[in-house]
Length: 293
Image (cartoon, rainbow, N blue to C red; front, side, top):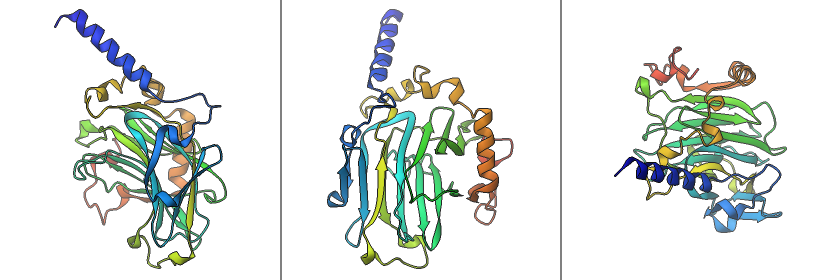
């Protein structure tokens, strides 16, 4: 295979991936059905408005959820969410990326909301890489997440994963493979669910008082899709052709860093890096000289 053919092939592959990248101008509303489908609880999912708002509900019979048609290997993934206004102890509203497949080798990036009414809402993030999770951090939200929609974002590129709320970074998980720390690299599907977890609280809610309803908006996806039958596409998704992979997305700018440190100082209610009872040996990514803190 000569160099000219390789060059032409690579250019074609990059062009194909670039053309497949989703993302529309900010003033265009993307309908739910363009990028997502219902995963379960068909009769507990209500798509309304101009197909730009989805209500997921949970009651005694079922929870519900939706997921993206495609898997992605990098991008900015965003959802506007308004949480259930009732006491939602043991009821988890979520937005996350997951590689599915083998649970012992899967990757996942989570937003999960706990609490409500009797307990203040906590936003928990978690990172799974190569089947290893247990990297929970919890943030005590500085606003009422049931009163209106708020923006929740996951930026994922080859350098780091950044979790943000209303544009404010609340967590950064750096690529520390040089320290022997696994980093999520498998193509992942975007999902959102509401479900019951009886292990998540001491006082169980009365599900007969349901339904418990979470609302979602913002169904555009700025991501690089990967075909399961084209594993080489994953490497192309790290290309600087995509704006979320370029240098100014590799680290926080000074303003973001200031906001991030403010969240860490005032709103972090749990951090696995500080849990010596659970992790007597400090994980490499938690060391002060790592890229995490």
